[in-house]
Length: 365
Image (cartoon, rainbow, N blue to C red; front, side):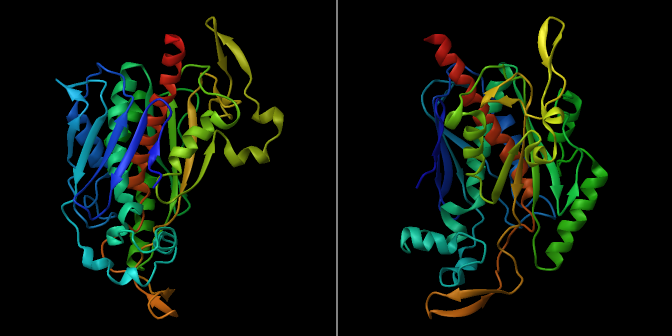
C-alpha cells in the first residue's frame, strides 16, 4: 500500500482501524528540537472520536506512545516512531459489509485491489482512523515550525451549504487562531457554527450524513520555496491532502472563483512596503508558478458526506451475486468535517516543514 509521503521529511502511516494499534514513522526530522508531548495530546483531542454529540460514539483516547526518535525531550535525528493503540473496537458491526459493500465507500474497490485479503474490520487501512497518526505527525511538525516562525491553522469553512467567515488572506490575527484551536467546533463565526451543528444533527436523525469545506492557511513561509511544474507547492500539498479519506477537492487562493474574475481582478499587484515587497491582494493563495511569493498559503478542501449511514441503500451481495440492500450498523460520524479540520491542519504542517527543509538542504549545499 502506498502510505508513504514526503521529499525531505518522509512519513509512513501503518495499522488498521481494528488492529492492535495504528502509527506513524517520521524520517528526516531535524535533530535538536524540543517536543512537548502535552501539545501532541491536546492536538489529538481535537480529532479524537466520541467527545461531541456530532461525532461517532466510538471512544478512543488516541494517546500516543513514542518508541524512538526522541531523546531527553528533543528530536534525536533518528526516525521518530509512534503508535496509538486501538481500545474501543466492535468488529462484529462490520461482518455484513464483507459481502455487502457500502455505497460510496472503498469496500468494493479494496476487494478488487487486494482480492479479499484486506482487513474489513472498521474499514481496515482505509479507515479515517488512520488520520490519528497523521495528526500526531502534524503536532510534532507544528512545534518545529513555531520555532522557525511559521504558523498553520484551519477552520470549518462550510457544512451543508452553511458558510463560515474566511481567514484574512493577507495577514494573521494571533488571537483569532488561539481562540479557534480551543473550540470543539472550529469556526470563526459561532452563529454560523450553531446553524451547522443543527444541520449535522438533522442529518443524523434522518439516518443520513452531510459534507463540507475546510479552509487552511500557512503563515510566514519565506518567498522562493517550491518548484515549477510537477514539484510545485500546489502539487505537493494537494498530494498529501488527497490522502485523507473523504477529501474530494482542493483549491488554492481564489480557486474556482478565479474563473469568474477578469485578469485585472485576479492579479495580485506587488508594491513596496517599508522597504520590502508586499502584495495588495492574495488571489493566488501565496503561490505563483508553484513557488511561494511570501504571502500566506491559502487553500480549501472539499470533504464528502460520510458513506456509512443507517438509511437503507441499494448495493450488491458478493456471496449471492444478486442486488441487495444495506443499512449500515455501528458507530459513524454524520459529518466528519469538524474532526477532519485538525487533520488538514496537521497535513499542512507536515507539508510546510518538508518544504522548509528544501531551503535548508539548498543552503547547506
